[in-house]
Image 1: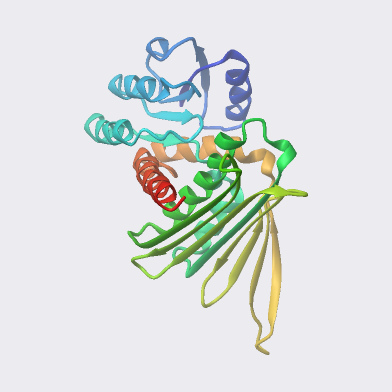
Image 2: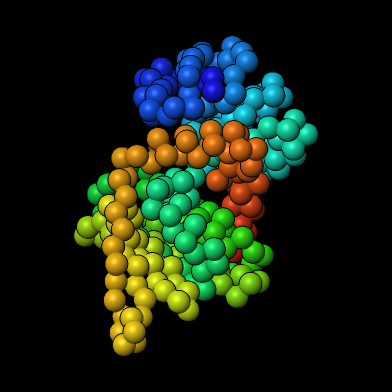
Length: 284
């Protein structure tokens, strides 16, 4: 496959290194803009600017399969247009939603198709924030996007509560979702932690999966023959996330199937983010 990369030169070179190990990639070209990419099998668009969705649309209209590497976009109207455009153009689009694309998450999603319950707890040391308001929102958006993607069902009930110190500084948010298929998701983000902690727990009636997100280590618990809970461990390398995500995208093109995180997934997240923000304003 021939791959084009568009974006900041330094980041583009780094992504080129992620692509080189894949045998299916025989050529990588770095381009200054989406119009200069030419005929490629896949285009990696590295862009955190406000115009990234516009550039993505240009790529789709050029008939390019695109992987947008950026912060999660929130423009639901543009995302809906992009989703429709991908169908009309017959191309694939993947977005860099890292909670979904991480190696440990992909393994868990393949193992557990339908969770009974998802519990996510994240504590972040307050001194690590440079722009607390924007970065705090990013944290809960990431986890919400994962839950929506994994459960893949309508939302029957949603609760949201946020605490801000002095009505300005975000401190804590609690989201609770009950889906139409019966699955529940509980997301708790705390920005005043003394240390960093990030844990995702996925439960079914057969087993429980506990993931330590920073290390990408998983504990799989189930009952043994004596009805006692025991755990096995799985380890994944967090440093391979970008390399694995690029392979997921290229394989989806090769096998003619939807990528791991699509423009429709991003659209659904944007819709629910807007809904949550309206609720937070209503009860603030």
